[in-house]
Length: 457
Image (tube, rainbow, N blue to C red; front, side):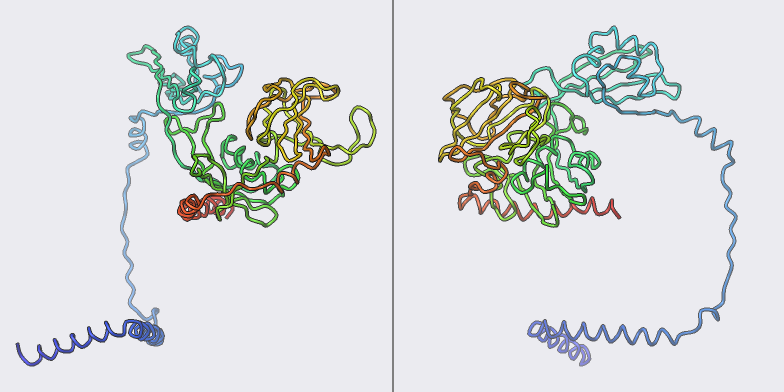
Protein backbone atom coordinates (compact mmCIF):
# COMPACT_ATOMS: atom_id res chain seq x y z
CA UNK A 1 0.00 0.00 0.00
CA UNK A 2 1.57 3.34 -1.03
CA UNK A 3 1.59 6.49 1.06
CA UNK A 4 -1.44 8.02 -0.74
CA UNK A 5 -3.64 4.99 -0.03
CA UNK A 6 -2.51 4.92 3.64
CA UNK A 7 -3.33 8.63 4.02
CA UNK A 8 -6.77 8.13 2.41
CA UNK A 9 -7.55 5.21 4.72
CA UNK A 10 -6.49 7.19 7.79
CA UNK A 11 -8.72 10.10 6.71
CA UNK A 12 -11.75 7.82 6.30
CA UNK A 13 -11.20 6.29 9.76
CA UNK A 14 -10.99 9.73 11.39
CA UNK A 15 -14.10 10.84 9.50
CA UNK A 16 -16.02 7.79 10.67
CA UNK A 17 -15.09 8.51 14.29
CA UNK A 18 -16.24 12.12 13.99
CA UNK A 19 -19.61 11.03 12.51
CA UNK A 20 -20.11 8.55 15.36
CA UNK A 21 -19.16 11.06 18.04
CA UNK A 22 -21.11 14.08 16.69
CA UNK A 23 -24.04 12.87 14.51
CA UNK A 24 -26.42 15.79 15.29
CA UNK A 25 -23.73 18.46 14.83
CA UNK A 26 -22.70 16.97 11.51
CA UNK A 27 -26.34 16.76 10.34
CA UNK A 28 -26.84 20.44 11.12
CA UNK A 29 -23.62 21.36 9.24
CA UNK A 30 -24.70 19.33 6.21
CA UNK A 31 -28.17 20.84 6.22
CA UNK A 32 -26.74 24.36 6.48
CA UNK A 33 -24.24 23.64 3.73
CA UNK A 34 -26.94 22.30 1.44
CA UNK A 35 -29.07 25.36 2.07
CA UNK A 36 -26.11 27.55 1.15
CA UNK A 37 -25.41 25.41 -1.88
CA UNK A 38 -28.99 25.83 -3.03
CA UNK A 39 -28.69 29.60 -2.80
CA UNK A 40 -25.37 29.54 -4.63
CA UNK A 41 -26.73 27.25 -7.29
CA UNK A 42 -29.62 29.62 -7.86
CA UNK A 43 -27.15 32.52 -8.27
CA UNK A 44 -24.96 30.59 -10.72
CA UNK A 45 -27.91 29.32 -12.75
CA UNK A 46 -29.18 32.83 -13.29
CA UNK A 47 -25.87 33.73 -14.99
CA UNK A 48 -26.10 30.97 -17.64
CA UNK A 49 -26.72 31.54 -21.37
CA UNK A 50 -30.06 32.91 -22.50
CA UNK A 51 -32.30 30.10 -23.73
CA UNK A 52 -33.23 32.17 -26.78
CA UNK A 53 -29.57 32.06 -27.94
CA UNK A 54 -29.39 28.24 -27.90
CA UNK A 55 -29.65 26.40 -31.25
CA UNK A 56 -33.07 24.98 -32.08
CA UNK A 57 -34.01 22.01 -34.26
CA UNK A 58 -37.47 21.11 -35.61
CA UNK A 59 -38.22 17.38 -35.90
CA UNK A 60 -41.23 16.35 -38.00
CA UNK A 61 -42.53 12.78 -38.10
CA UNK A 62 -45.60 11.55 -39.97
CA UNK A 63 -47.74 9.13 -37.94
CA UNK A 64 -50.09 7.00 -39.99
CA UNK A 65 -52.98 5.19 -38.38
CA UNK A 66 -55.34 2.57 -39.64
CA UNK A 67 -58.23 3.90 -41.69
CA UNK A 68 -61.70 4.16 -40.15
CA UNK A 69 -63.12 1.19 -42.03
CA UNK A 70 -60.39 -1.10 -40.70
CA UNK A 71 -61.08 0.06 -37.13
CA UNK A 72 -64.83 -0.47 -37.57
CA UNK A 73 -64.23 -3.99 -38.85
CA UNK A 74 -62.08 -4.75 -35.80
CA UNK A 75 -64.82 -3.46 -33.47
CA UNK A 76 -67.46 -5.48 -35.33
CA UNK A 77 -65.48 -8.61 -34.60
CA UNK A 78 -65.75 -8.02 -30.84
CA UNK A 79 -68.62 -9.56 -28.88
CA UNK A 80 -70.31 -6.97 -26.68
CA UNK A 81 -71.84 -7.96 -23.35
CA UNK A 82 -74.15 -5.41 -21.75
CA UNK A 83 -74.55 -5.74 -17.94
CA UNK A 84 -77.24 -4.03 -15.90
CA UNK A 85 -78.16 -4.26 -12.21
CA UNK A 86 -81.31 -3.45 -10.25
CA UNK A 87 -83.46 -4.57 -7.31
CA UNK A 88 -86.76 -6.37 -7.70
CA UNK A 89 -89.76 -4.27 -6.71
CA UNK A 90 -93.17 -4.98 -5.25
CA UNK A 91 -95.57 -5.62 -8.13
CA UNK A 92 -92.85 -6.68 -10.57
CA UNK A 93 -93.71 -9.28 -13.19
CA UNK A 94 -91.42 -10.98 -15.70
CA UNK A 95 -91.94 -8.37 -18.41
CA UNK A 96 -91.60 -5.29 -16.19
CA UNK A 97 -88.37 -6.55 -14.58
CA UNK A 98 -86.74 -7.51 -17.88
CA UNK A 99 -87.85 -4.29 -19.54
CA UNK A 100 -86.33 -2.21 -16.73
CA UNK A 101 -83.08 -4.08 -17.27
CA UNK A 102 -83.13 -3.37 -21.00
CA UNK A 103 -84.16 -6.85 -22.16
CA UNK A 104 -86.85 -7.57 -24.73
CA UNK A 105 -86.99 -11.37 -24.76
CA UNK A 106 -90.39 -13.13 -24.81
CA UNK A 107 -88.77 -16.54 -24.32
CA UNK A 108 -86.94 -15.36 -21.19
CA UNK A 109 -90.13 -13.79 -19.77
CA UNK A 110 -92.02 -17.03 -20.33
CA UNK A 111 -89.20 -18.99 -18.66
CA UNK A 112 -89.37 -16.75 -15.54
CA UNK A 113 -93.08 -17.54 -15.30
CA UNK A 114 -93.09 -21.31 -15.81
CA UNK A 115 -89.79 -22.65 -14.42
CA UNK A 116 -90.10 -23.71 -10.75
CA UNK A 117 -86.67 -22.33 -9.80
CA UNK A 118 -86.83 -19.16 -11.91
CA UNK A 119 -90.26 -18.24 -10.51
CA UNK A 120 -88.65 -17.60 -7.11
CA UNK A 121 -87.08 -14.45 -8.54
CA UNK A 122 -90.47 -12.73 -8.45
CA UNK A 123 -91.94 -14.55 -5.47
CA UNK A 124 -91.63 -13.52 -1.83
CA UNK A 125 -90.19 -10.23 -0.68
CA UNK A 126 -88.89 -7.59 -3.14
CA UNK A 127 -85.35 -6.23 -2.92
CA UNK A 128 -83.54 -9.14 -4.60
CA UNK A 129 -80.25 -8.01 -6.17
CA UNK A 130 -80.33 -8.77 -9.91
CA UNK A 131 -77.45 -8.56 -12.39
CA UNK A 132 -78.17 -9.32 -16.02
CA UNK A 133 -76.15 -9.73 -19.21
CA UNK A 134 -77.80 -9.24 -22.58
CA UNK A 135 -76.86 -9.09 -26.24
CA UNK A 136 -76.97 -5.77 -28.14
CA UNK A 137 -80.33 -6.88 -29.57
CA UNK A 138 -81.84 -7.28 -26.07
CA UNK A 139 -81.72 -11.07 -25.74
CA UNK A 140 -81.05 -12.46 -22.28
CA UNK A 141 -77.69 -14.21 -21.98
CA UNK A 142 -77.32 -14.65 -18.22
CA UNK A 143 -79.08 -13.48 -15.07
CA UNK A 144 -77.77 -13.73 -11.51
CA UNK A 145 -79.92 -12.89 -8.48
CA UNK A 146 -78.92 -12.76 -4.81
CA UNK A 147 -81.49 -12.71 -2.03
CA UNK A 148 -82.23 -13.68 1.56
CA UNK A 149 -82.56 -17.38 2.46
CA UNK A 150 -85.94 -18.75 3.47
CA UNK A 151 -84.47 -20.12 6.71
CA UNK A 152 -84.38 -17.23 9.23
CA UNK A 153 -81.48 -18.91 11.05
CA UNK A 154 -79.28 -18.25 7.98
CA UNK A 155 -80.22 -14.59 7.47
CA UNK A 156 -77.02 -13.19 9.02
CA UNK A 157 -74.65 -15.80 7.58
CA UNK A 158 -75.79 -16.93 4.10
CA UNK A 159 -77.57 -15.81 0.94
CA UNK A 160 -79.25 -17.51 -2.00
CA UNK A 161 -77.67 -17.23 -5.44
CA UNK A 162 -79.89 -17.88 -8.46
CA UNK A 163 -78.33 -18.27 -11.89
CA UNK A 164 -80.29 -18.34 -15.14
CA UNK A 165 -78.17 -19.02 -18.22
CA UNK A 166 -78.61 -19.88 -21.88
CA UNK A 167 -76.73 -23.01 -22.90
CA UNK A 168 -76.94 -24.27 -26.49
CA UNK A 169 -79.96 -22.03 -26.97
CA UNK A 170 -81.82 -23.39 -23.93
CA UNK A 171 -82.45 -21.49 -20.68
CA UNK A 172 -81.87 -23.23 -17.35
CA UNK A 173 -82.03 -22.10 -13.70
CA UNK A 174 -80.21 -23.18 -10.54
CA UNK A 175 -80.17 -21.97 -6.92
CA UNK A 176 -77.50 -22.50 -4.27
CA UNK A 177 -76.89 -21.37 -0.67
CA UNK A 178 -73.66 -19.39 -0.29
CA UNK A 179 -71.92 -17.91 2.81
CA UNK A 180 -71.95 -14.13 3.15
CA UNK A 181 -68.61 -12.31 3.20
CA UNK A 182 -67.63 -9.46 5.51
CA UNK A 183 -65.70 -6.35 4.51
CA UNK A 184 -64.84 -3.05 6.19
CA UNK A 185 -65.92 0.12 4.39
CA UNK A 186 -65.46 3.84 4.95
CA UNK A 187 -68.00 6.58 4.44
CA UNK A 188 -68.68 10.21 5.29
CA UNK A 189 -71.27 12.85 4.60
CA UNK A 190 -72.66 16.29 5.32
CA UNK A 191 -76.11 17.03 6.73
CA UNK A 192 -78.24 19.09 4.35
CA UNK A 193 -81.72 18.10 5.52
CA UNK A 194 -81.71 14.87 7.55
CA UNK A 195 -79.40 12.07 8.63
CA UNK A 196 -81.00 9.49 6.34
CA UNK A 197 -80.86 11.84 3.34
CA UNK A 198 -77.13 12.37 3.99
CA UNK A 199 -76.37 8.65 4.38
CA UNK A 200 -78.37 7.85 1.23
CA UNK A 201 -76.36 10.46 -0.66
CA UNK A 202 -73.14 8.85 0.61
CA UNK A 203 -74.27 5.31 -0.27
CA UNK A 204 -74.33 4.19 3.38
CA UNK A 205 -76.94 1.48 4.18
CA UNK A 206 -79.98 2.42 6.27
CA UNK A 207 -79.05 -0.19 8.87
CA UNK A 208 -75.75 1.65 9.41
CA UNK A 209 -77.53 5.02 9.58
CA UNK A 210 -79.79 3.69 12.35
CA UNK A 211 -76.76 2.50 14.33
CA UNK A 212 -75.07 5.87 13.74
CA UNK A 213 -78.03 7.65 15.34
CA UNK A 214 -78.03 5.14 18.18
CA UNK A 215 -74.28 5.54 18.84
CA UNK A 216 -74.62 9.31 19.36
CA UNK A 217 -78.09 9.38 20.93
CA UNK A 218 -76.63 10.37 24.32
CA UNK A 219 -74.67 13.26 22.72
CA UNK A 220 -77.05 14.61 20.08
CA UNK A 221 -80.81 14.99 19.99
CA UNK A 222 -81.28 14.08 16.33
CA UNK A 223 -84.81 15.47 16.39
CA UNK A 224 -83.88 18.98 17.56
CA UNK A 225 -80.12 19.53 17.51
CA UNK A 226 -79.14 18.39 14.02
CA UNK A 227 -77.81 21.31 11.96
CA UNK A 228 -77.22 21.88 8.26
CA UNK A 229 -73.48 21.55 7.69
CA UNK A 230 -72.93 18.95 10.43
CA UNK A 231 -70.58 16.21 9.21
CA UNK A 232 -69.98 12.56 9.99
CA UNK A 233 -67.38 9.90 9.20
CA UNK A 234 -68.00 6.21 9.71
CA UNK A 235 -66.05 2.95 9.54
CA UNK A 236 -68.47 0.06 9.20
CA UNK A 237 -68.48 -3.64 8.56
CA UNK A 238 -70.88 -4.74 5.87
CA UNK A 239 -72.04 -8.18 4.81
CA UNK A 240 -71.78 -8.79 1.09
CA UNK A 241 -73.17 -11.29 -1.38
CA UNK A 242 -70.61 -11.73 -4.17
CA UNK A 243 -69.24 -8.28 -3.33
CA UNK A 244 -72.66 -6.57 -3.23
CA UNK A 245 -73.85 -5.18 0.16
CA UNK A 246 -77.00 -7.06 1.13
CA UNK A 247 -80.26 -5.14 1.39
CA UNK A 248 -82.54 -7.37 3.45
CA UNK A 249 -83.76 -7.64 7.04
CA UNK A 250 -81.47 -4.93 8.48
CA UNK A 251 -78.54 -7.33 8.83
CA UNK A 252 -76.39 -5.30 6.47
CA UNK A 253 -73.54 -4.88 8.94
CA UNK A 254 -72.48 -2.88 11.98
CA UNK A 255 -70.72 0.37 12.85
CA UNK A 256 -67.09 -0.17 13.92
CA UNK A 257 -66.31 3.48 14.65
CA UNK A 258 -67.72 6.90 13.84
CA UNK A 259 -67.23 10.61 14.36
CA UNK A 260 -70.02 13.18 14.28
CA UNK A 261 -69.42 16.93 14.28
CA UNK A 262 -72.55 18.67 15.56
CA UNK A 263 -72.64 22.46 15.97
CA UNK A 264 -68.85 22.51 15.70
CA UNK A 265 -68.27 19.94 18.45
CA UNK A 266 -66.79 16.54 17.57
CA UNK A 267 -68.18 13.35 19.12
CA UNK A 268 -66.59 9.93 18.64
CA UNK A 269 -67.91 6.38 19.03
CA UNK A 270 -66.07 3.05 18.87
CA UNK A 271 -67.72 -0.38 19.17
CA UNK A 272 -65.96 -2.45 21.83
CA UNK A 273 -66.67 -5.60 23.84
CA UNK A 274 -65.85 -5.47 27.54
CA UNK A 275 -64.35 -8.27 29.65
CA UNK A 276 -67.81 -9.84 30.02
CA UNK A 277 -68.31 -9.96 26.25
CA UNK A 278 -70.95 -7.22 26.20
CA UNK A 279 -70.59 -4.85 23.28
CA UNK A 280 -71.19 -1.12 23.37
CA UNK A 281 -70.02 2.24 22.05
CA UNK A 282 -67.22 4.20 23.73
CA UNK A 283 -65.59 7.50 22.84
CA UNK A 284 -61.91 7.56 21.85
CA UNK A 285 -60.94 8.20 25.47
CA UNK A 286 -62.61 4.97 26.60
CA UNK A 287 -65.65 6.64 28.17
CA UNK A 288 -68.77 4.53 27.63
CA UNK A 289 -71.55 6.10 25.59
CA UNK A 290 -74.00 3.60 27.02
CA UNK A 291 -75.93 5.07 29.91
CA UNK A 292 -78.28 3.55 32.43
CA UNK A 293 -81.10 4.83 30.21
CA UNK A 294 -81.37 5.06 26.44
CA UNK A 295 -82.37 8.41 24.97
CA UNK A 296 -85.24 6.90 22.98
CA UNK A 297 -87.54 3.86 23.25
CA UNK A 298 -87.26 3.37 19.49
CA UNK A 299 -84.19 2.91 17.29
CA UNK A 300 -85.06 5.86 15.08
CA UNK A 301 -88.33 7.71 14.63
CA UNK A 302 -89.88 11.13 14.24
CA UNK A 303 -90.76 13.20 17.32
CA UNK A 304 -94.25 14.59 16.71
CA UNK A 305 -94.69 16.23 20.10
CA UNK A 306 -91.93 17.01 22.59
CA UNK A 307 -91.77 17.65 26.33
CA UNK A 308 -93.31 21.14 26.18
CA UNK A 309 -96.55 23.12 26.00
CA UNK A 310 -98.78 22.08 23.12
CA UNK A 311 -102.33 22.32 21.79
CA UNK A 312 -103.96 19.03 22.79
CA UNK A 313 -105.09 17.29 19.56
CA UNK A 314 -108.34 15.97 21.10
CA UNK A 315 -109.24 18.44 23.88
CA UNK A 316 -108.14 21.42 21.74
CA UNK A 317 -106.62 23.11 24.81
CA UNK A 318 -103.09 24.31 25.55
CA UNK A 319 -101.51 21.94 28.05
CA UNK A 320 -98.09 20.88 29.23
CA UNK A 321 -97.18 17.71 27.34
CA UNK A 322 -95.44 15.66 30.00
CA UNK A 323 -93.94 13.11 27.68
CA UNK A 324 -92.60 12.66 24.15
CA UNK A 325 -94.62 11.36 21.19
CA UNK A 326 -92.84 9.38 18.47
CA UNK A 327 -94.61 9.04 15.12
CA UNK A 328 -94.07 5.62 13.51
CA UNK A 329 -96.06 3.01 11.57
CA UNK A 330 -98.20 0.52 13.47
CA UNK A 331 -96.14 -2.52 14.44
CA UNK A 332 -92.81 -0.67 14.82
CA UNK A 333 -90.94 -2.30 17.75
CA UNK A 334 -90.81 -0.47 21.10
CA UNK A 335 -87.99 -1.20 23.57
CA UNK A 336 -87.43 -0.49 27.24
CA UNK A 337 -84.89 2.27 27.83
CA UNK A 338 -83.40 0.66 30.93
CA UNK A 339 -83.20 -2.41 33.13
CA UNK A 340 -86.20 -2.96 35.38
CA UNK A 341 -89.37 -4.87 36.22
CA UNK A 342 -92.75 -4.55 34.46
CA UNK A 343 -95.16 -3.21 37.06
CA UNK A 344 -98.13 -2.81 34.68
CA UNK A 345 -99.03 -4.23 31.24
CA UNK A 346 -102.59 -3.81 30.03
CA UNK A 347 -105.35 -1.33 29.15
CA UNK A 348 -105.42 2.06 30.88
CA UNK A 349 -108.15 4.46 29.69
CA UNK A 350 -106.81 7.10 27.27
CA UNK A 351 -103.38 5.44 27.17
CA UNK A 352 -104.86 2.35 25.55
CA UNK A 353 -102.47 -0.57 25.75
CA UNK A 354 -99.70 0.58 28.07
CA UNK A 355 -96.57 -0.83 29.72
CA UNK A 356 -94.99 0.70 32.82
CA UNK A 357 -91.49 -0.37 33.90
CA UNK A 358 -90.03 0.25 37.34
CA UNK A 359 -86.26 0.93 37.19
CA UNK A 360 -85.63 1.36 40.92
CA UNK A 361 -84.57 4.48 42.83
CA UNK A 362 -88.08 5.93 42.30
CA UNK A 363 -87.63 5.95 38.51
CA UNK A 364 -90.13 4.48 36.03
CA UNK A 365 -91.05 4.74 32.35
CA UNK A 366 -94.40 4.55 30.54
CA UNK A 367 -95.06 3.34 26.96
CA UNK A 368 -98.61 4.05 25.71
CA UNK A 369 -100.98 3.51 22.72
CA UNK A 370 -99.33 0.17 21.91
CA UNK A 371 -100.87 -2.12 19.32
CA UNK A 372 -99.41 -5.17 21.07
CA UNK A 373 -98.01 -6.08 24.50
CA UNK A 374 -94.95 -8.36 24.50
CA UNK A 375 -94.39 -8.46 28.28
CA UNK A 376 -96.42 -9.27 31.39
CA UNK A 377 -96.62 -7.82 34.89
CA UNK A 378 -93.70 -8.86 37.10
CA UNK A 379 -91.42 -9.74 34.19
CA UNK A 380 -87.75 -8.69 34.39
CA UNK A 381 -86.55 -6.69 31.35
CA UNK A 382 -83.11 -5.49 30.28
CA UNK A 383 -82.23 -2.29 28.44
CA UNK A 384 -83.21 -2.62 24.78
CA UNK A 385 -85.65 -5.52 25.26
CA UNK A 386 -88.75 -5.39 23.09
CA UNK A 387 -91.85 -4.73 25.20
CA UNK A 388 -94.48 -4.02 22.53
CA UNK A 389 -95.24 -2.31 19.23
CA UNK A 390 -96.46 1.11 18.08
CA UNK A 391 -100.22 1.48 17.71
CA UNK A 392 -103.13 3.91 18.01
CA UNK A 393 -105.06 2.48 20.97
CA UNK A 394 -106.79 4.72 23.51
CA UNK A 395 -106.98 8.45 22.84
CA UNK A 396 -104.78 8.57 19.76
CA UNK A 397 -105.38 10.39 16.48
CA UNK A 398 -102.91 8.16 14.63
CA UNK A 399 -100.23 5.51 15.17
CA UNK A 400 -97.54 6.76 17.55
CA UNK A 401 -95.83 5.99 20.85
CA UNK A 402 -96.39 8.20 23.89
CA UNK A 403 -93.38 7.88 26.21
CA UNK A 404 -92.95 9.21 29.75
CA UNK A 405 -90.06 9.20 32.23
CA UNK A 406 -91.07 9.58 35.89
CA UNK A 407 -88.97 10.45 38.92
CA UNK A 408 -90.79 10.13 42.26
CA UNK A 409 -94.02 9.96 40.26
CA UNK A 410 -93.46 13.26 38.41
CA UNK A 411 -92.84 13.32 34.64
CA UNK A 412 -89.38 14.46 33.55
CA UNK A 413 -87.82 15.30 30.18
CA UNK A 414 -86.60 11.87 28.93
CA UNK A 415 -83.65 13.33 27.02
CA UNK A 416 -82.38 15.17 30.09
CA UNK A 417 -82.76 12.07 32.24
CA UNK A 418 -80.88 9.90 29.72
CA UNK A 419 -77.97 12.32 29.45
CA UNK A 420 -77.65 12.70 33.22
CA UNK A 421 -77.84 8.97 33.94
CA UNK A 422 -74.82 6.97 35.02
CA UNK A 423 -72.28 5.92 32.38
CA UNK A 424 -71.00 2.35 32.35
CA UNK A 425 -67.27 2.15 33.12
CA UNK A 426 -64.62 -0.19 31.64
CA UNK A 427 -62.43 -2.30 33.89
CA UNK A 428 -58.68 -1.58 34.10
CA UNK A 429 -57.83 -4.44 31.73
CA UNK A 430 -60.63 -3.36 29.39
CA UNK A 431 -59.26 0.17 29.26
CA UNK A 432 -55.83 -1.16 28.30
CA UNK A 433 -57.24 -3.25 25.46
CA UNK A 434 -59.38 -0.33 24.30
CA UNK A 435 -56.39 2.04 24.18
CA UNK A 436 -54.70 -0.19 21.60
CA UNK A 437 -57.86 -0.35 19.49
CA UNK A 438 -58.42 3.42 19.64
CA UNK A 439 -54.95 4.06 18.22
CA UNK A 440 -55.73 2.24 14.97
CA UNK A 441 -59.29 3.57 14.81
CA UNK A 442 -58.12 7.20 14.74
CA UNK A 443 -56.32 6.60 11.44
CA UNK A 444 -59.36 4.87 9.92
CA UNK A 445 -61.66 7.73 10.89
CA UNK A 446 -59.26 10.24 9.35
CA UNK A 447 -59.27 8.20 6.14
CA UNK A 448 -63.08 8.05 6.17
CA UNK A 449 -63.29 11.81 6.66
CA UNK A 450 -60.95 12.45 3.75
CA UNK A 451 -63.42 10.72 1.43
CA UNK A 452 -65.99 13.42 1.98
CA UNK A 453 -63.34 16.17 1.81
CA UNK A 454 -62.05 14.96 -1.56
CA UNK A 455 -65.59 14.78 -2.96
CA UNK A 456 -66.36 18.30 -1.73
CA UNK A 457 -63.23 19.65 -3.43
